[in-house]
Image 1 (cartoon, rainbow, N blue to C red):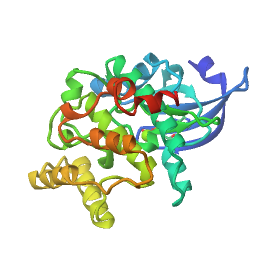
Image 2: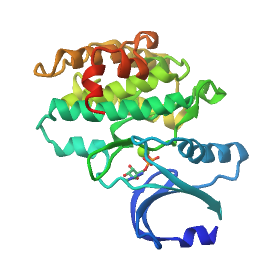
Image 3: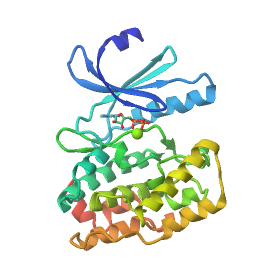
Image 4: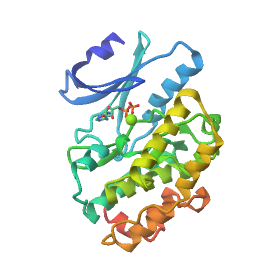
Amino acid sequence: WRRSMEKYSLVKVIGEGSFGRAVLVRCKSSQEKYVVKEIQLPKNQSKLENSRREAILLSRMKHPNIVAFREAFEADELLWIVMEYCSGGDLLQRIKQQKSNQFSVDNILKWFAEMCAGAKHIHDQRVLHRDLKSKNIFLTDNGTVKLGDFGSACILNSSKAYAHAYVGTPYYVAPEIWDNKPYNNKSDVWSLGCVLYELCTLRHPVLPPPHFMHSVVCCVFTLFSCVQFQASSWKSLILKVCRGAYPPLPSHLPYELQYLVKQMFKTNPKDRPSLHTILTSHRVSKLLRTHL
Ligand code: ADP
Ligand code: MG
């Protein structure tokens, strides 16, 4: 293991979270930069499997729109996941940089097509991402979008997918999850719908009126994550939010895009298109394919 680690020299720490930290490293022999996600391994056996799942699932993905896995190794209660470095930062940062300057339709379609291609690859491996959001979508230096952070991912139909434990980020969580139904491939589609909405409007979809909703969502988030509180009144409130009409997209956007967002925000997951449908038979697919 020491030898594996000695292949890299530390450049800088780029992120810190509950899992541990993300560091930018350089391979001493090739001079290439990589990101290492350094995860503190728990002593408890079942939690240990959870930590390893991220490395295992990421290593199965090989797609131009998914952050490439390089290697993983562990020792001294640390798991190192070495992966491709996306120097363009995350999509949330990129959206914030725009201030109120809208992205072009071509730009939106290109990124969205890339995200869908990456997410379809994940679903084709019978894996669910479960935490798709602009902060977990990265940009390369040439402006290609890559899905990352497989820390919440799970295998489709595994008992984990049915676990009612809270996963995901409140803004992007599909109505069925608030309703205690199992996470499914269409829940990832809902989350991508939120990202598409964000690209079109530069804001989150479930925010009318913004300040009130933000505090409600944050409050529920805190309750869920800190004390596993499951008050039904909170859930019903969230459901109302999910069912409620979202503020419309800017009218200059093509009708196909407006229609797509509407389909992706269907409350019943069965009514939402799959990624396969979006990319092949949806009315927007022709627009998308020209950008892939
Ligand atoms: P978590 O959200 O669980 O803390 P992430 O995998 O999202 O972990 O990584 C944390 C942060 O590290 C990200 O928000 C991002 O800033 C940075 N990061 C992670 N992976 C990459 C990558 N492949 N390229 C560039 N930055 C990355
Ligand atoms: Mg993340």
